[in-house]
Image (tube, rainbow, N blue to C red):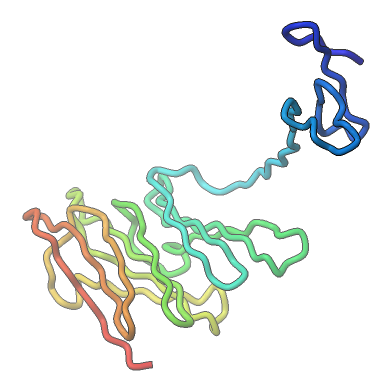
Length: 193
């Protein structure tokens, strides 16, 4: 089969069907500059809820995670485990599993030794300003066992107007956010283990 191209050259399919060459490579394999490679892409359909915000990512040993705010205010989690045959996608809702309030903003992720964390601005009645919620799980706990606390609620800190940003330092976890009065707030927690 010949597919016309510009000029006098003809495009012919390779025997493998994956690449098309204007001219076959010479015996030394030097004539590859005019080749076009066609890649096969497999799309995976998933039933994850639609997104209302931007994703945040996290990498842990053998896993890749994506968290995002769903249209219902849930914090959704999609991940793949490289150790599983076929690398299937998994999904769950961290707000549903933790019994957490709905999100008004996008999540921020944090990985600390043996733990996975997300922080987000939750709703506060009709106001867009709200507390910073924290959901986390320990790597040695069952996957569905999540913990919830409010980093602004327990310290009576100002509500957040913006989404949180996270930082991990040795033995400390830090969260920064823009408060309702437009100041930048900082909350931290120290860990000895």
